[in-house]
Amino acid sequence: TGDFNVQSAAARSPFPDIAGTWYVDAASSAYTLGWMTGMRAVRDGQLLFMGTAIMNRTEFAVLATNILGLSNCDERALNDVSGDRDQIADWGRPAVACMLQHNIMIKYGDRFQPGHTVSVYDFAAGLFNMVRYANDNGVDVIEIAAQRFGVERSVVVRALAEGLNIVDGELVQP
Image 1 (cartoon, rainbow, N blue to C red):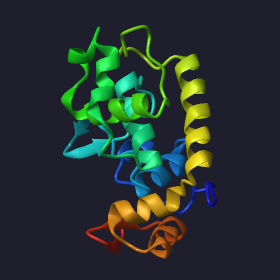
Image 2: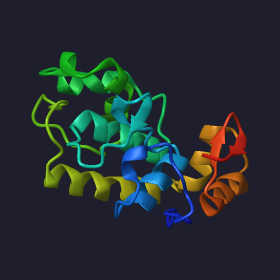
Image 3: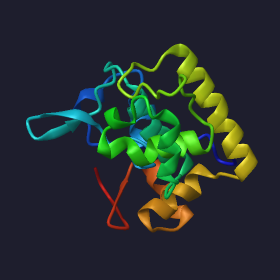
Image 4: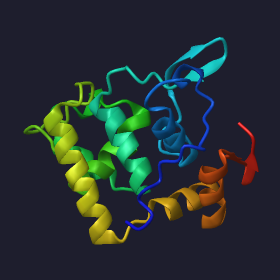
């Protein structure tokens, strides 16, 4: 996972609710890399990060999928969670399928428990399995971000270093 130290004090995000917080650099870097695009609420027309919000298992699946650059997973993996497959939100189904297909997140019997809060166990096991997957598959998170935005790797590195965002393949001021 070369270049995994992606947190940048220069990174910027559109989230007004992170100014002055201890996690501003991490949240801004996660936005710049396309890992997190904000949470459910909008205030005065602005997307919020909502750093104190509780994350559910479907949201964690989407985050992990974004970090690892997973896509086009076989949704038949959802058959393994037939007990609550119908409770997985449409926007989260592809990510949950990826997590199950690649054994990154655990299931509970025949259930995924998509709306449940991410437990410490879920978080620790998910992180461990993400690192295992990244190491086994040569995942480079900077390269994944570059592919996501359709730019060269150096553009992502520059965006992080200079506090710029990538919009339509161009570096722009936030």
